[in-house]
Image 1 (cartoon, rainbow, N blue to C red):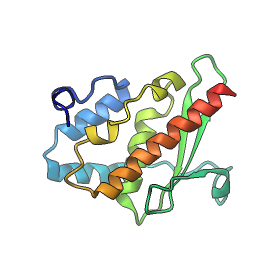
Image 2: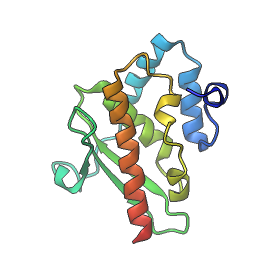
Image 3: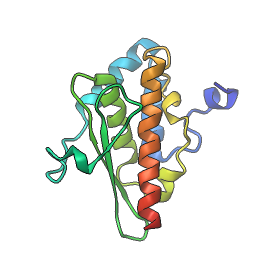
Image 4: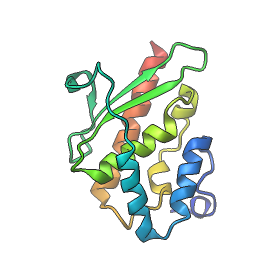
Length: 155
């Protein structure tokens, strides 16, 4: 971690994501995992068009668990982003990070999502609490979201 990151973990983040990072950073390392589990419980159910139709979503291969993501980008001027995620209940850390992304990014303009720093997963301060493989899954989720937003905006 760079000195920049440790001194200002919210730098370059949109307000909702900055607030989430602040919440994690305010806790001792041991309690951060509990907060992540709370985010797992807040992950919204899939809308009807995806329920039972995971083939309409993109699988996140970096995740050990079967995680699927679909991003809808609005046609309005700012191109608001809406994130839909399927993550199994038996994968609470993965599901928790999906909840963080959903809460931190949903409704943001596409430009803000695309400008989100790639290290946002590490800014939560979870490296000691979750395995490197789980961290890779988290960064994979964010990469899929950004790619889908880029494709939608270009279309």
